[in-house]
Length: 433
Picture 1 (cartoon, rainbow, N blue to C red):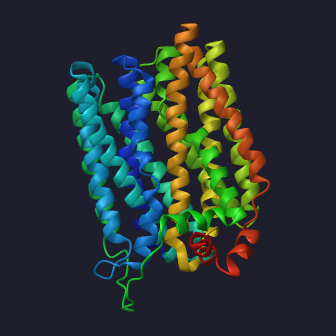
Picture 2 (cartoon, rainbow, N blue to C red):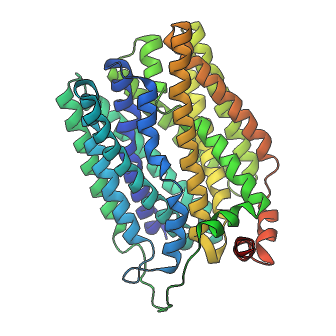
Picture 3 (cartoon, helix red, strand yellow):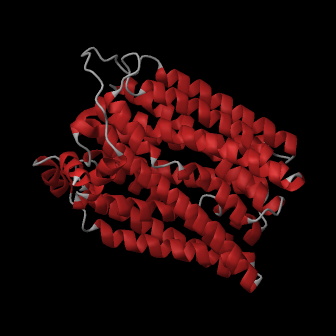
């Protein structure tokens, strides 16, 4: 089982590695060095998440339509190839937006769209496979291994990127993105080897679910609906800072490209520490308690980061980044374990797709909110740093709201609501009516 977990971790790490150059190095170069509007960068970065509803369709369809006896692997392969293609194409977007605006927009839609489709195909598929392989008792351990490996990959990628782009030149940037893309492809391919057993039951494919039934499966279950919006609000705050944290470091403290890229590695190291702590707490402390501790850590991190902008203090800023990482690590393990508990054996792909869609919707909302608010506030007060501070303040408020919602989430009640009749059957009946 350990080998399977490591293989799942390699796939998870490979997909995450392709996001690091886009959400750390590239957005910093576009906003700070090329003076491209943060709103434009945010819209491009959010394009992948417009495809998020497809996760429910992919999960539901793959539950019932194996390809050559495999329900998850074909979709993981397609997703991995698309994410690699997206990261390799993405540097061209930054330079074309400066020299040829409309061509830059066209290539941007292609690059970020390819990455987004790949992310949606791969994520719902390997999370569904992780749930199926692990079983209920092993899910938390599988999550810990997968996310530990992912964060380790993010740290290594961030450090390597910082070295490869120093001194910064457009050629160095393009070369670095190619290296990351090819490394991700190799690691992901190793993770795929004999990971999923072929289906031998020969069961015929069913018709699958309509969009109404899939959304109904969530809306008809009060706990599922609550968990969906809790995840969306929490992750919108945590993930929404992705495109702004490094440009903020450049604007507020004059950090170089290499120095701002290092922020990701500091954050990642703190996440790793928190993942180890969360793993040690497994079975000793309730998942909801660990998730709440993570939320409070993230809240403190945002407060310190926005305070650093007002105080112009690097020390406070880096301390905030550390708390943000520690809180993110605790929240990640606890909430993903809760997420896997909030599924049913018969409809793993459906529910995993729904939670994956919550993740993607939150990225979309958080990214666009961050870019637009930053630009609007900057235009009004003529202070870029103030724009960032306002965004971090809004994200802190969203974390506070999520902490209130977390207190109302109950896995046992979710499972009771699923049982008689099944939530999918109720949704189907409601859809027909």
